[in-house]
Length: 163
Picture 1 (cartoon, one colour):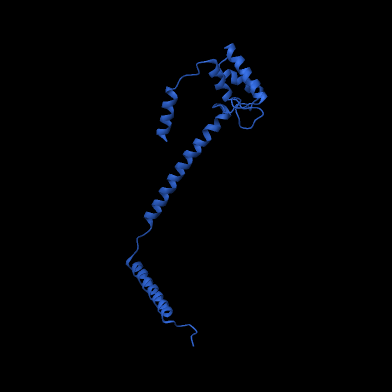
Picture 2 (cartoon, one colour):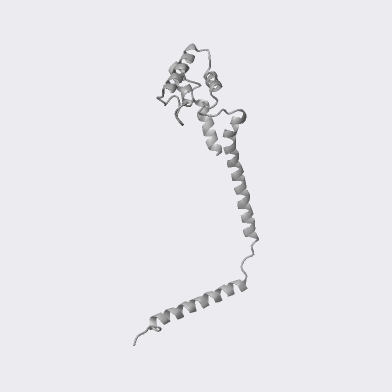
């Protein structure tokens, strides 16, 4: 898990700081906005008229170059609180990011405690004694004798109705 997190941090730290062209900014912002009509589709992907209007409005705000991408998203979020596809990582919305990680950590720790308890219980179980071994050997001999007797009866043809 540590290696995966380190890999994500390395990739995130070395990538470009942001889009270079206004078209790239429009694409990035519209990919983070949900289509108000479509279910589970971004404004970037949707061909709906309302999505086209939002794309045009985002393009106008980018051309004015007065607002950052986050500020443009905040403008749309002020109008419709459910327009963001990706929840913010602050406040109450941060629980969306924190709870799965906490669940994973708590589950891993609980499994560790369970495995340790099972190991201690197994170590506390006494080894078989000579009396136990003799009892098992006698039961196996009796079982083998019973199987041999039943196979002899079947081989002799006893129990059949031949006249």
